[in-house]
Every structure is written in C-alpha cells, then in structure tokens.
Image 1 (cartoon, helix red, strand yellow):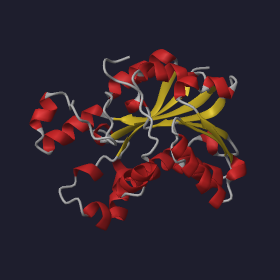
Image 2 (tube, helix red, strand yellow):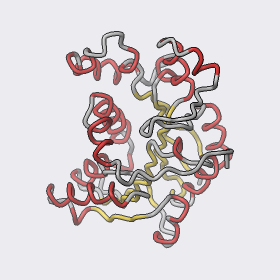
Image 3 (cartoon, helix red, strand yellow):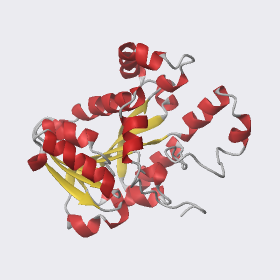
Length: 259
C-alpha cells in the first residue's frame, strides 16, 4: 500500500459522476472507444458471461446486456449500483444483469471461485491504494485464455497536459496536492509499470488503446461539444497508433490470461 492512500468509495457522488463525467463529451468518447475495442473480441461474437468489476452506474454493462450478454456488475458504492439497477429496470434488462455490492478485494467472497471469459476493470486502479495487488486479484476471475479489459488513468498524459496548461508548480510536486478534487483520480499510473505488473501476474498484452488522445488537449474547449462527431472519429482512427496511444488521458489494455 502506498503511504497516505486509501481506496475510494463514491457513495453520495453518483449524481456528480453522471453530470461531470458520464454525460459529457469525455464520457461519450470513453464509451465509444471501449465498446469498439470490446466488440472486436471473439468472446463477444456470441452470448458471453462478463464480469464488470467496479462498473459503477453500469453504462458498459447495460450496453453489453442489451446485446444479449449476461453481466455481473460489481461496485463498492451501493448508490452507484442503485442507479444501474434503475436503468436496467427501465430498459427491461434486469434479467441480464446480476448486481454485487462489494469492493474488489472482497469480491471473491460472493463469486464462489467463478471464472469468466471476459472481465472488465475500467477506471478503478487509480483509486486503489495497492493497484499492483489488484491486478493479481483480478486474474483469479479470468478463465484460462480469457480476456481482462483494463483501463487506468495515465500519469504520463496527466503530466503532459498540466505542462501544456502551465501548471508548473503542480508538475514539480509530482501532481500531488493537499486538497485533491474529489472526482479527479489521485493515483495516476505509469503505463509501462502497469504492463509489467500484468506480465508478472500472468497476462499477455493483446492491444493498447489511448482514450481521449485529442479531446482533452483542444485549445478551444467548446469544440469538444460543437465538433464532437469529428473528434470521436479522429480518436477512433488514431488512438491505437503511437505516439497518440500513449497520450490518451486513459490507457486501455486488452490482456489475455496465459493458459
């Protein structure tokens, strides 16, 4: 565990997440990129059982359920899961989803050693005190030869953007502040470190995608909305190519568990 860090629970913040993240252009791009990457997997070519760890309000879980897949959605926040349950009911998808209220570290107590051909863990690691151990924990739910879809907040991109914004003192302090913004991840991760942890845990890298490679760097922020369609198309066109993939505010890795 890193000094001073504890896992985050987002009870009482579900509304702010919806308003400030999920229902914005950056949230739309994130979902578009992840769905594009996931739907290319052979595991989703036919009916599949998926585990979504830390899936929050279930945006991706609901999309996958609507495509006929069965999804186990877990989260540490009961409030987030209530939002997901209400959405599943409204969309007539309640029979496609199972909801598990649990932190990642205690999830094994409710899953009974079950393994899945596809496990999702998106925007979770950067909120954990011990992300490296979390990767090893995730492995137990991935079936041999199965896929882990892992997305995390990219420290290199976080540093790059803050230099562009002129936040030099913040960068010199290694992006640490005494009073962090509640919705901003406080433990961004270095991609090469995460890839090394995954390899050590017994995963092979299948692909790397940047998420929001261009969106967050626009000088005119109004263009994030006014030119959204063009921006999404460019993100999808270039976000697997370097150097753009490494400039994404988030990094999405597709990893295969070794047989």
